[in-house]
Length: 397
Image (cartoon, rainbow, N blue to C red; front, side):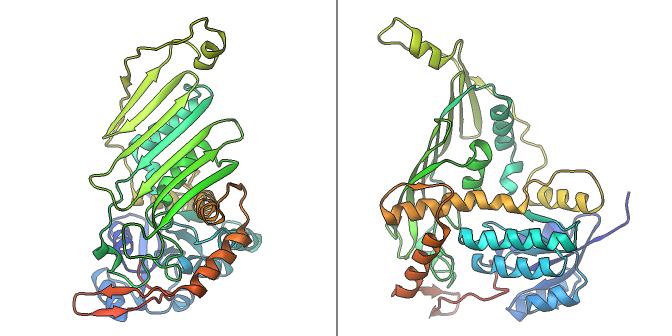
């Protein structure tokens, strides 16, 4: 086994940052050479816990820790700045979702990456879409790509198992504000769902979105969304999400010409048609028809390795010279962000928007929302209540 160590640094020691620190400490061929957070106490404590060096400024981490890879786990607006600074230095990047708040920033990151590769040909850019490794989603991908469902006609995803209380939104000054987070459920909870949609079906050509702002919570961003997608191949898609529903539903239906998949409650059901649905529609003499089909439950290896460590492990393997695919290349983060921005832009413009979306129009609208905001965020900590809408480089996610 190779004794080479890939040197990692982490910026942002919040909930997800702690997840990264835990598995990194257990990985072979990995050395943690620095942790960074603007909260010095937090940085010092975690540096002591994991036997590494504390940094309080991300540029100091990039310039002085000797890291090979930086994991970016800070609030969304800071992703582009840190990634671009890393690329300039030939440092590999593992970025938490979403890649950025808006597609213009994502494109700047991707352009910086492509430019840096001219100087550093082996430079790697990965994004943390660990849900691609989840066994049920991996099986969906396998079946869809096999063509077994034939021509896809519809995908409907009701994902309302995102319950968040008002207390959750009050727990951080950057949460659920245009200035601090750049959006609500689409930006925070749903990037994985949006990535999964475009991973399975590709991007639509047209997006119609309906985003409800602060409908159930005292927040200035969206907490309930319904979206309709039209694809160039004729397939349509639906997405229904909210952070205000209990017990919530997570049901995905994928309908094709020769079969249908339904994923819900830890079961994947496959309805196999005896003939083409579309051909039957065109050729049958019956005026009405019903197919009685008993679905087959698809076997899924639920114990297959999955999660954050698998995504990072693929990157480590590639850096060690192994021929392996990353779970998600960084530029792929543009897909889910296009859906999120497109839904919001459509909702605010009250019309469908074409893909690729107008990034300038979205950014202009977002800038105006920030500029004109009169929302006062109440932040409740263990010891006090404060009003805070700030976020800065190195802040915890």
